Amino acid sequence: MLENIKLENVLFLDIETVPAVASFEDLTPLMQLLWDKKSAGFRTPEQSAADVYQRAGIYAEFGKIICISVGLIKEREPFAFRLKSFFGDDEKTILEDFASTLRKFSAGRDVMLCAHNGKEFDYPYIARRMIVNRIPIPDVLDNAGRKPWEVKLLDTMELWKFGDHKNFTSLEVLAAILGISSPKEGIDGSMVADIYWKEHDLPRIVKYCEKDVLCVAQILLRFMNEPSINLDKIESVTPV
Image (cartoon, rainbow, N blue to C red; front, top):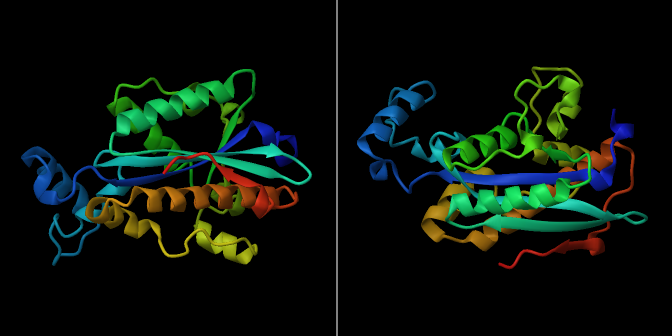
């Protein structure tokens, strides 16, 4: 399968998400009740729904997207890589700008998306939030009724499983064992909500998200037995 991939047609991506509001108390009474029901399945008897509200960001029904970073391979021999991020407080604008870029990138190409754990998280999260925000879902993300071989979504975690459905390997672990620079230096996903809601340090979150995208690209290249992207050939066009 991988030998048939045209790298210039792959758009690598990662998203950062946070709880929809700053605290449990800021939710409407209805959403408080619904979060209480949702969180009952994973919180301990000693914990309240408010105690675990920071986890709300991983659920598309209770969270929002604050950053989508994408990357594409621009040149070969050596590989060059270009990054761009869509970020801010207005999720609808982020999603509209991402969808517009995806439509332009897809014009005349048999485009594929690539993310780590994308099939379980990034792809459905983006699609669900587009529905919430009344944004048409781009064709590459809309898999309704499609046969498996028609789906154009790559997932480096799924590729690493080799059919082992019990296995979960984080991006950080996979990067470490393959000798790829870790994207988790100084920040990890569990810290994003506080960095956003308490510090509002969006540039730091964008940098972290772009590092993840680069890491995913390096991993896919490794899977394909291709050379790594040269660090001096990486360009970000995101104004932060």
